[in-house]
Image (cartoon, rainbow, N blue to C red; front, top):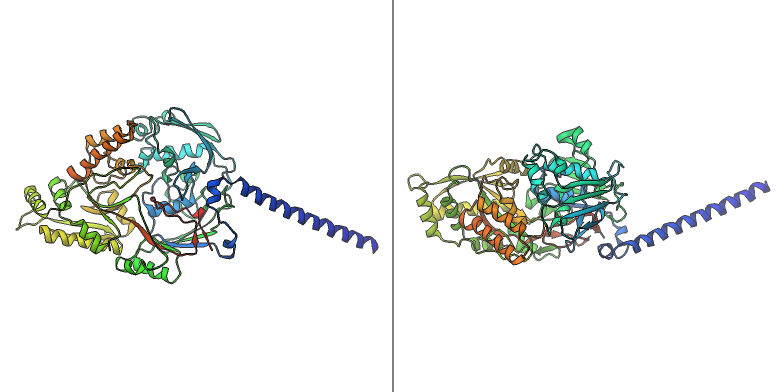
Length: 550
């Protein structure tokens, strides 16, 4: 009996010693991790542990059902928000400053001539199935984006890379001739055709995210469904109920999972802004990015209201391939028959900036004036077109995606054109996915659009309008415009480069008008005061990784 008593005491002593040792080790790791965080990352972390007292479940409205969650396919901001949580590129952007930060790549070097980038991929980066993320994952993903068979709408984001454009246009058949090279399993070399000051920003963009190519090949169009998807970002796709909700949960294989505080993200696709607004007021949502136009004066009084500058533009596209909008005089007439000052003041409650130009103040860009409001000149141009008479007035269909605010703008335009020019306008609204498909296949006459910059540079607004550009979607082509874009890529003097962009904008909104600019939107919405780590920035970039609730 005595033997066993001594043994039990010895056992308890060792267990206690073991627990103390484990605790001290964990505490040591905690402080080491804190000390190892770079200054920029410490600045983005919670300053205390109050967040631990709150369930870390972020819920927000994303305005519509996403078209896809495939990084090579998506083109819209609402898809980018989700995909940015599921996948991660070589670099990511600091949500406060928008400076490029290490992500899958722990470091990189840039050659003196600014042409060669070598990215060192961190060995702890893993896919959600536990497999390592390697250089060939980026190599294969980028080949897929550029492959002519894929016809990715954003393939031009890789065109700064040597021979990428030629491969996408089928002028080069062998991808090994493109400036992407695997040095080792954890090193990727990228060679540009000419210096690109925003290439690191591009490397953070969803189109350049890696994808699990074996899963893509196995499941084809269904590879990004919840039952099949494998991702490398901070979160994984747990659930996707069409027109109901998307649920993300923390990726336990993510290399930086200990930094992420949000455990679960629920994303709603409510396209009725009034319904979403009520849900926010009932504390059912943490964040909404749209407010019903009549409710804006009321919302402005709330502590949760936010409004700040954005790098974006709201405009309409013309399908220039078919009548009546293959006639530039008709396009000009419609553009100058709209009083944008009245639109923004009386319909949009004065929170947006009227614009007869396309590009806002990206990286110091100074926009041109554009064409002023002039009803008499509009009538003259329309009569000269030969497509409008009193006996047979011009008639066309205006398309927009289902949304109360979009509807009010469409109704204003239709009424103004009928009143000022005597034309007949039929309105057509569609759900998001149908709307995008109609735009891509040019099944429209004039269609509502908006553009949020992918990075802070005028190029993000102008390169989309090149001939056959994936996001052009108007059928418009202009060789002079295309040539000027090439000039901007070669020009190193910033003042001269801006002057070239201004020439391009003149072609776009004063001479040819494949588009009808309306206003520069402010970023506005409602954010619960319990949300932290969500920063106002011009790109509307709010990665879940840096957010927490308390």
